[in-house]
Length: 240
Ligand code: ZN
Image 1: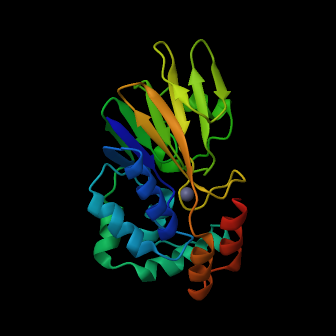
Image 2: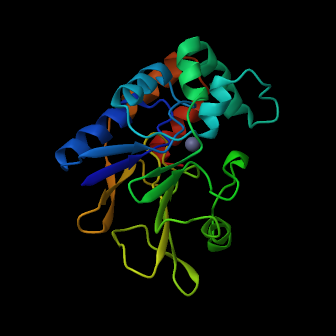
């Protein structure tokens, strides 16, 4: 069984299509979506329909929650809020309901998935260091847990203590727990502008990060044509 875990798509259709093509070439048999299907970029409805048609386990991201609600976005950063306001108008009521019904945490096979953290999944906390990761491990009852949210691939390992190791191939070993940020399909922020996702090979107990090139200029043109903030087009080229 080879499972692709992908998330933080953020309405980037070109990146999503490139990732799914790569996963298929890599012999992936199953898919799990880590949320934030929409927000920021210009193809929320198309990305939502692709993920929905895949009918794979999907957890809710903060942008999915904000795009499907009617609450005020005033307290958000203005660029994200402008994109979410626009996104709300791009989705049908039925598509918004699909987002509303997504669950915060899911167990798939013998691992767990959550968009932000297991300790307070609805608070959308960011995990940026091993101390943040420790709070998650207290609530992690499976050996492996995947998450997203920061758009930066990271690997935290808990054995006698919690440490961070490079986000490269991970061999899952008995006696250790793993909390893994799978990076972002549609808006990477680690300085590498290629789409990011992971493949978990359950037969060999190996987790591999994949980076996939896509037509960034096409995505940028759509962002600008939609009247979304220019900064959103700039950042996907920079990978920040
Ligand atoms: Zn996100």
